[in-house]
Length: 196
Image (cartoon, rainbow, N blue to C red; front, side):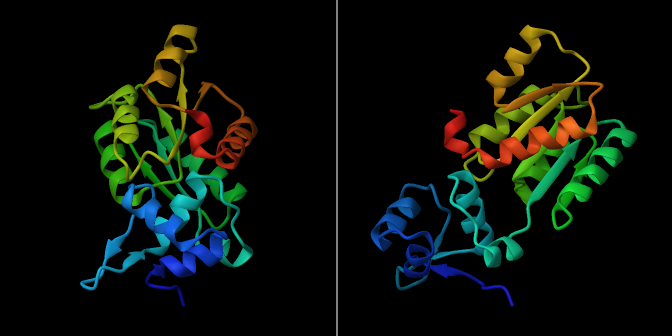
């Protein structure tokens, strides 16, 4: 049965740091937490896992089993969404995969689902991929997500612009599915702070 929350002492033992460090992370907003009426900090499991992935803490087998990767696939083409989602599930069978067909849905699902990685077409109806990336990066609840931008436009200026908006990597369409998986694996292994 999954825990409802972790205490600062449990997290300090798990991550091998002093519990005052965990308190500092909470107070600085690096680790999301809530406080009990008595002032004790509590961290929900999903927030702990997101923190660990964001800063590159290794996951124990036990934690990894209770912290499946969350991936979001955003594309206005049904076939692309379906194919990429299937490939992700083949590569990460325990991953939770959500899809979105436009920029507004991508923003909403990112806020609610808080994915670890996003494969996102940049030419989206409604809200384009540039704006979606910027919104993800400015929200402390979602800025840990790795963003792999995909687009039929492979112009260098275009790639530079999407990276400046917040994408971690760019893959031009059409692409080999094996290449997409390799890029995602590379992004997921890299601590979030290393990209900035």
